[in-house]
Amino acid sequence: MTDLKVFYAHDFTQDRSAAAMSPTEDYVEFYLKSDVDALLARSKPKKKVKAKHSPLVERALCEMNDAIKDFGEYTYGDKGPYEVMDIDSLALDFRAFEPDAAAEALVELSKVNDNAESLASCLTGHLQEWDELFEFLPEDFVW
Image (cartoon, rainbow, N blue to C red; front, side, top):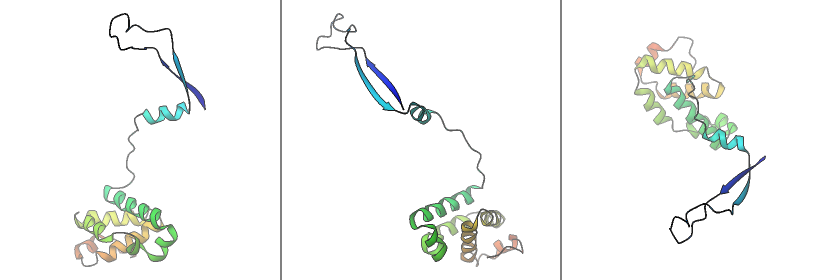
């Protein structure tokens, strides 16, 4: 922690004449205890980071992480994504894409981690009536 000094050099009175608007000799110091590096870090523009995953997978992972944060990893694993997430809206997002893109996103999602693999399996089960999707899924894709 460092001391950050703030000086107020002008003391304007009710009189708006030129003499009254000149700086006074009285300075008021305020000492703020703060981490200067943290303040400067907040003002720096954030670097753009290339997305590791497709936007569809990023949305699914974001929803999954929110569910895990809200309900806990144990509940997510025990109850499954159907109980703690809005699978219908995610399925609609997948249906908005072409079957080949949706299949690619499901495969990508299943390779992220165990929780994402569970979500991919859940979504695949939810989309089982979409026959075109299964034409693009690899044969070894487990759902």
